[in-house]
Length: 304
Image (cartoon, rainbow, N blue to C red; front, side, top):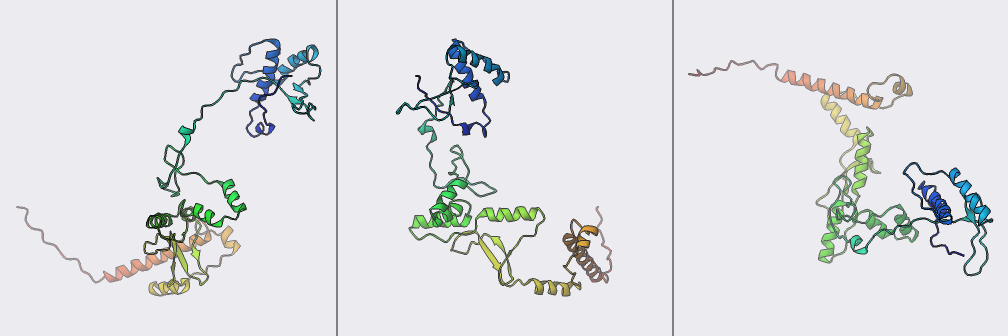
């Protein structure tokens, strides 16, 4: 019999929705047995129902064992035994794409980075880096390559200070610095803050911190600098004493949230109220400061 040159995996049809290659295979089978040449207009091709009568004609005249959907029994070329299931066989055009290694080879040490994510750009034309995707991460996780993963996610990607220090120490032949916090973490925090969510870094001792580029620290990247002296309660109390404000209760009931909104939500509404009070106090203090000042007449010289 005629050997099969190319085997199409059925898994390549549902996700890609390329039923056209299956119809082309059947149409090619019909055309080669009728000595036809077929030209099919785009979006106006024949349907599977249109092909069935021609397959039945071949079934009656030449191949009785073929099914109505153009499936036939294939035999193992080594043993001669038939395959367990029938297979759709036909003829179709195959076009070889011109992909050359010389056009694809690419290497990079350092190069351009994205302004937002601070990660390397993609593609050879932009002198980009190699994307390390989810499945590649899974592969390293499967082998327990923790240090390689840490490098991929920090100094080789968007740990700004860390990658500078790493490059410097490689040139000097020194040990590598400790990786810092990736820039993508800061971008995530800023996106959440842009949605109105107050996201901060809180430590076990109650102090808060923010992500800043710590130029003085020699131990790596974008550090989470801790404001040790900042204690929320004491700072707020001192501000309230300075401005003569009484502290508002931060506990909000469901009734306040859903039935009596102050602003966008109750928490934001409270902040707005406190800011208004603070502005009024400053305004009053300012008026007291300048209440004794008397306007003075300014003599303007003669223009002539």
